[in-house]
Image (cartoon, rainbow, N blue to C red; front, side, top):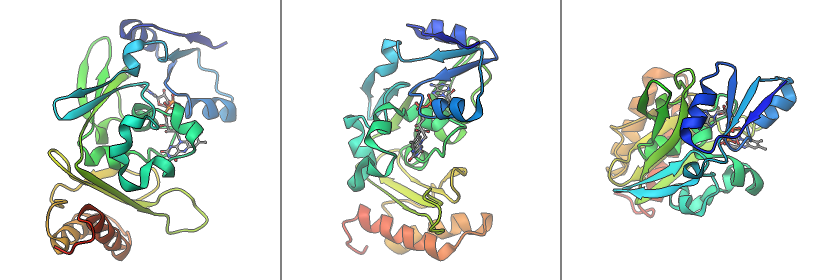
Length: 249
Ligand SMILES: Cc1cc2nc3c(=O)[nH]c(=O)nc-3n(C[C@H](O)[C@H](O)[C@H](O)COP(=O)(O)OP(=O)(O)OC[C@H]3O[C@@H](n4cnc5c(N)ncnc54)[C@H](O)[C@@H]3O)c2cc1C
């Protein structure tokens, strides 16, 4: 039997999530299909939706702080999606429920937001009854046992571009993607396989000249994978173009 627990504070949520058999639920767009398709019966589902602080969205210095229930489709996130907007992510109904934090910490989905969040120096706050730590988004998949991700903070990009390809036409998931953002604390980030690890590329400075930016992306990726480097260079070219209004620099 599964018990649904609906804490109204982070203290209550942490206490409930400390049960090793507990599963945390934010928007549920990953958990719900997982329960349905696998027939899994966790003993406790810890729903975060009744915690008022989890819905908060507040500016903090030059960053934006999002509580764990803030959905991907929130209007305040428009600047982070750049000129293409959030349409590439699922459907409007899913974007209204799927959370940004859930995308980062989920092992159930493709985590397609992560390149964007790495490019804007995203940091996730992971809290357990024993510890409290800020993790770079790249490392947030491995929350400590019993830990809950309570919030994420993002640098505010002046401009951002996320270009993606799915080289095999039968797959709809992004297989290679490059995101770069201009602004304080922003950088470039690349993903080379669907749901694969995302790497920041600090040497590829988005404000650099086009050839230097593309060269730095190529150099960062070449030693690590069998990826088609020419496709990646074409993405880097598009991203640089987006960031600089197509003006060659
Ligand atoms: C129809 C459909 C389309 C989708 N399209 C996309 C897409 O285009 N791109 C994409 O990347 N994803 C997609 N997804 C996957 C999913 O929507 C995202 O991964 C979403 O961001 C997950 O957020 P959530 O709040 O719904 O997570 P939930 O389903 O609530 O949780 C997912 C996992 O993360 C854990 N978790 C969530 N929040 C926390 C927290 N605060 N602390 C600790 N653990 C937590 C849960 O325990 C669970 O294991 C899609 C899903 C569906 C059903």
